[in-house]
Structures are given as C-alpha cells and as structure tokens.
Length: 294
Ligand SMILES: C[S@@+](CC[C@H](N)C(=O)[O-])C[C@H]1O[C@@H](n2cnc3c(N)ncnc32)[C@H](O)[C@@H]1O
Image (cartoon, rainbow, N blue to C red; front, top):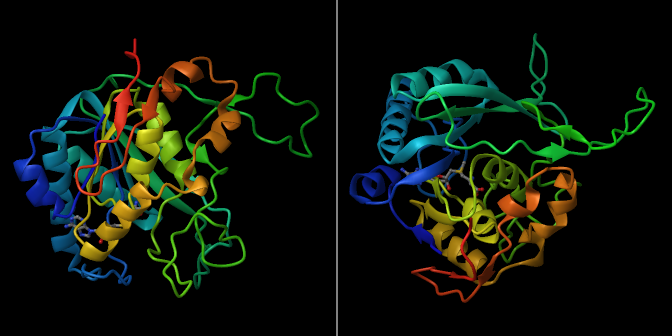
C-alpha cells in the first residue's frame, strides 16, 4: 500500500501526478490571516477563491467516477465553497455542520459562532460508495431509553472534539520541544476517521492537497487505504515524516472503533486485513497486503 507525502505546492503536484483519487479531504488555509510558516493567509478574496477553484478543478480531473471531496471551511464561507464546487462540476451531496465542543467564538451584534462547515460533494450524481455509519450517542436527559442499535450519522457532527491549546488539549496535538503546538490547524484523528470510513473502502486512494501534519495519511494507513499528502512548508513536511515514522499511541484509531460498533459492515470497511510493514522516511510505502479486499 502507498502512504506518501510530497513537499510541494499542491497545484504543481496535481499538474504532474498520474494518480487517480477516490476521496479528497480539502482543508486549505482559510484566508483568515492565521500564522503559517510559508503561506500568506491574507490574500485578496478574489485571488483566494480563484485559487480554490483551480484546486477543486484539478482534483476533479484526478478523481475516479463517483469519487468524493470533503471541503472544510469557515461557516461564513459556505456560499463560496458551494459556488466553487459547482463551478468545477462537483455534485453537492451534504452540508455537514461540525459543531464545536469548545466555547463559541464571540461576535458583536450577532450570534456567537459555534461550528465549522464541511461540504461533501461527488464526481457525478451517484457516489461510487457510501458507508452508512452508526454511532451510539449518550442518552440525553430528555430521552427515556437507550437506542438498541445506536443511530445513523447525520449531517450534524457534534461528537468530535477539535484540537485546542487549552484545558482540553490532550495528547493528540503535535508539539514543539518548547511545548507549543506545532500546527494550530491540526485536524482530529476522529474527524478523518469518520470521513474516510464513510466515503471509501480498503485499497482506495485518499488525497490531501494541504496535508499540514499528515492526519489524513495517519488515518488512511490504519484503515488500509492508500494515501497521498502534499504539504508546501518544509518544516511541517519534516514533522509529517516524523509523525508517520514514530507512530504515536495517541494516533491509533482502534480506540474509536467501539463508537461505530452498530455499523452493519464495520469489519469490512475497517480494513483490518492489512498490516504495517515498515516505515521509510521519503518513500513511505508502508504496508504489506496480507489478503485481498473483496
Ligand atoms: C489548514 S492546514 C491543514 C491541516 C491538516 N488538515 C492537518 O490535520 O494537519 C493547511 C496547510 O496547507 C499548507 N499549504 C498552504 N499552501 C499550500 C500549497 N499551495 N500547497 C500545499 N500546501 C499548502 C499550509 O502550510 C498548511 O500546513
């Protein structure tokens, strides 16, 4: 299996790659004037959305028929995200609300912001596959009985904690030797687990053009999916390699398997028929296929 990271600009990579992808997680810089090592996060909005359009267009060309994209953004940009996806021929499927567990962002004269959006779209009307996951949310005080088989995941995700720097930070965020977070936009393992489980199967090809800390690769490889990440910044890229090489317990997905125990085809889509073979720094071809996925 392939698990590879390229230190490149994602447009340059897409212009030259021969790969075809079944699923893309698109988590670009949000143009919010955040501090990135080697990216200007304060572009002219027209320039920014033209760039996003070019990225979505190129990904579309490299996507298998019925393949999926999950485009994550700030809630205020929902209109632009859908417009860009439609202009580049993607078919809208869902607007996912990722409801934050941390405090809302306070705003003057309007409601505080408490969610991020993820637009799920496909190449063509019909997704090539969609695994209907079941979760088992805790009983609310207003509910009398626990559901015997959990419930299907809906388009509101309120059970995934974002990685913060405060009290609830936990061990998952990568840290520099001085204790500071390496990358403020590191996505949670749990988020990628849901996306990859829902829209792919073992052996598929997963793509992350703005891979940051390689969260997508980390989850893909444990689910027996091939994965390609692209990260422009050399410093983050080095940490991606480090994270993939020195695999941390906190990056293991097995601790979340029980959350999906009511999913009908869980064993089939979890991909446990593959094992990790070895880790090599640059060409990270990590897996030995133990038996064919049927
Ligand atoms: C929002 S972060 C992604 C975080 C990632 N999802 C994670 O879990 O770590 C966006 C990343 O895109 C990178 N980036 C910015 N411009 C890029 C480009 N043109 N090509 C590839 N990567 C780029 C930034 O350096 C940053 O690490």
